[in-house]
Amino acid sequence: MLSALALLSLAATTTKAQAQEPAPSEAVVSSAKDGEARTWYGLPILAIDVAAIGAFVGGALEFDHSADMGGALMLTGIGGYVLGGPIVHFSERRTGKGVASFALRVMAPPTGAALGALVGSAFDSCHSDSCDPTGLAVGAILGFIGGLLVGSAVDNAVLAFKPATSRQMTLLVLPIYKPTTGQTGLALRGIW
View 1 (spheres, one colour):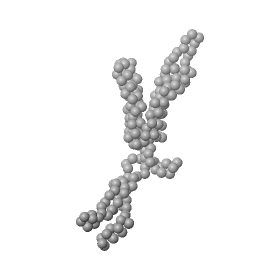
View 2 (cartoon, one colour):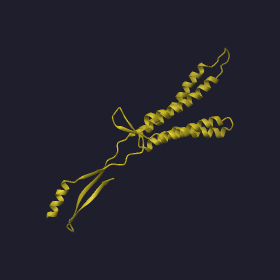
View 3 (cartoon, helix red, strand yellow):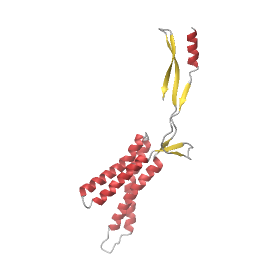
View 4 (cartoon, helix red, strand yellow):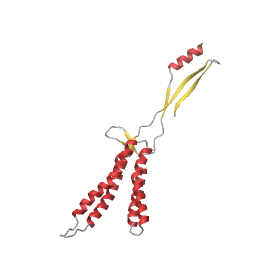
């Protein structure tokens, strides 16, 4: 009888023990907007972007010598650029940022190419019967590469952050009573 009363009083005053996770090794940045710390996870995105842009530029330079090799390198670079950032965002469980990163990476290079072509066409030398499209082509290529760089920079500087709040781990001490044997005890349950 006394053990049952002790068990009921222990159940009424169940205690919670809390433990903290070790500090993450990632960079933590204080956000002025909402006052909470944010963690930057953009290093894999930056590494993928550098490799992808390098492959694209290398493929563009190799295209004159070997169209097959240059084309393959350019496609690999574009594929890595378009999919690399969103995959990292999705792996960090940031679905909205992954979709935004994909849209940014798909739209920034063509927009840069169009703006570069407009600027380059202003420098074309048009005569009465013919125009030299070199300025247009160079402007479009430089604008495309500029769009690649701007998309990567915006993704890393704006989107690659997550809240740095640590999960609190909970440990519950629960009473156990076995009516068949009349035994009482304590059990630990929780996530840690």
